[in-house]
Length: 316
Image 1 (cartoon, one colour):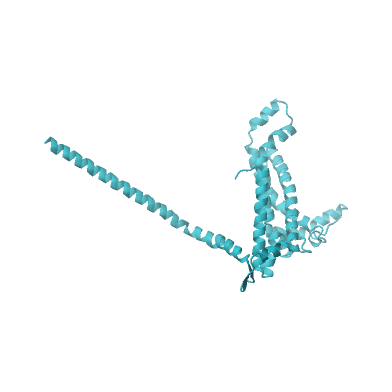
Image 2 (cartoon, one colour):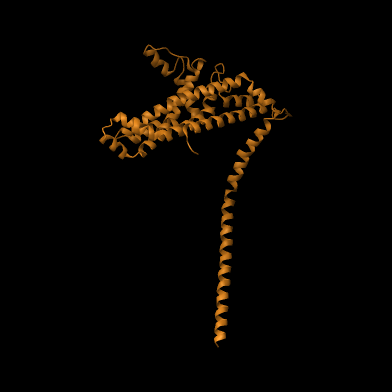
């Protein structure tokens, strides 16, 4: 009887172990199948990335080694890169791009930080000022460029009307190669400053108030608090704005295309690298040269971003 009881107990234990093992296998299979289900939902996104990002990048790299007008292709090796690097209009577009970008960043980041500091210091109306300054940033840059063409019109523009009323000189803005870049800079500052203000405000509000209270106790003035507490705590934000600002500036295309067309009129004075690529690719049908210029621009952006990361000591 005892042996029968032991055998029955062993049989029961084996049965339980078998059931547990079977249930464990079933759970693992269900878990795997549920994981694959999620991947199925990601297929459209993967297809979109492959079709609209990976393939164009690879095709552009291939075209950079060919002389192509869209139908006839001839392998030329590095000739397209040589043509771009020895092209006067290309280096003129590089100069225009950096000129506009440098002054946009030098003006917008300090000015946006000052405005953010002033908004952060007021007790009422913060949300109103946030919305007021951020509105330009959500405005379409194409629409903003068209409006600025009227605002900066040399004869009928409101800005020249105000300058003339004050007895100041009235520039030709977009109709004069000497001042057209500054018209684009004003547009860029107006459009980007809201973003700079919001980012700076977010960091300003994250600075601990205890640091300011301790500084007050030690006898620090308001200016000293701003200089030795606020600015050092904003270095990360300044680095972020500097890097994102440069990437956007080096890719500038929409506003200069609206204002001056693909050749950056007047006299190519506002043609940027992006506009040069568009002009060669979609008006000259020189797709090989346009592709080579695209990769040269990519390398310029990559090098400049790397330098900015090193200078700002920002980790990614």
